[in-house]
Image (cartoon, rainbow, N blue to C red; front, side):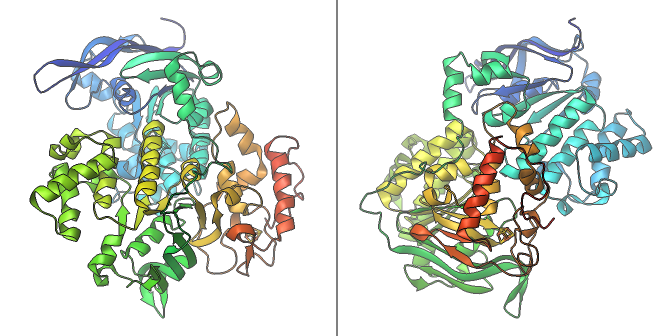
Length: 631
Ligand code: SF4
């Protein structure tokens, strides 16, 4: 066996049986090698077999699938033909699997350390004392805050990015030879993604382990992979070094994937709308709204989340809401939908005040404002036929029954570009993208004026996600419906929204037409978000982390503050003595563009030019006094 070859996938074949008992090949003769210290990325759209192949390294198939040929050799020994006991030792011992959602992986009722060390102790690889020591070393290596004590906390007491890194510690604790990372940063916002990618890369290098990285995000692949395997429908289309695949792809499918990769958000990406529905009147407005959780005492929420929010959604417009996790994006949509009554302020629909709670809203008001949930998987009842799922709002809001309802269901399925026969299917018979279309169709069935879409494309791969955006754009043009589009994916928002609202720690720090918001001057937080979107360039991650401005912003998390500018503790331009005590006034710029900052327009433009110089490498930051920083 070739020196330092750790794992070899040889002509792997996996199949399923269809209803007629015929064998359907799912993975069709895939081969690739993994060497020590190497990260091999498996890329491709949903259904390309990425996850199925990566799970085969654990000698595991999803229910309904079976191995039909080939080998998966760890140090020359085939894991597929191992006896069950050997395979049990392999899983979590030699090969560790990191799922997409850390929140779903951790048990909320058990402390972090118990969970991180469990597999290493259970597999007899380390004693509890050794595992505890190793866990603390890993917390330090993964640059977790309060590394000596973070293990005593419960999962809900750490942030999403920290939990994702703790999941890496869990996988690494038993010193596995190979880690399988399945879309570990897909659900994270841009700044957290950088933080997690950086930690993964460092640990894989330091531990001299190897990893399979499953993802559909090519810009992420460019930051972590040494070798890339491009998959389509269970077959390898092309494989090679990261440099070759990213900079010189050969296969037509790889080129197509590259073309669908999310571009860096820039001005001019917004769609042009100009039909009869596109009017300047406000459809929905939020005025001086403050909201939070834990009840309301003296007009203030006990746990404040949103403060003094003012936004408007014009007829037929798309308002994109961006910001990191914990900034209040979903809470804003919940308040607008009436799921969380505000402590103060008003929600207006067509210039009429809505009651805070949806329980007090009239049926026609409920019908006009519809919520589309993030996870179609959990939003759709698995026991109901698609026809019933879409038919229910038709009956509830419009009183349709029988043939009339049936015909309308077909019409709505057609609107979301699904065949009418789908009405007699169950959600589990649909792909992720199709389920998301049904999720949208259910809201459309109410014939709403405003659709509140909470991260509706974040669980989809870039090609399916781009198709959903195209569909939404078509629906907006056809029906005149307005959208509030919440997403952590800036590129998607930039390509779809007419206006952008940037939320930070529960306050609007910048808002305006998309082209204006994506063009300097930027609010310092918007600047951090835009600069954190990975570029499809090898070395981008390292270059970015060298910029002090980025390092400060990324290292610190979102904190809800009661006074001063909420971005103060992460802002490289903060003015000491002012920013931490005084809430900034709103700078009114052209075309309704607003920035909430103590800096003047001239200062923002000047510092923007400085940042561009730094980000494009004309001048490295070395002088601590370059920015008037408070830290
Ligand atoms: Fe906030 Fe001050 Fe930074 Fe402006 S300069 S974003 S007001 S901390």
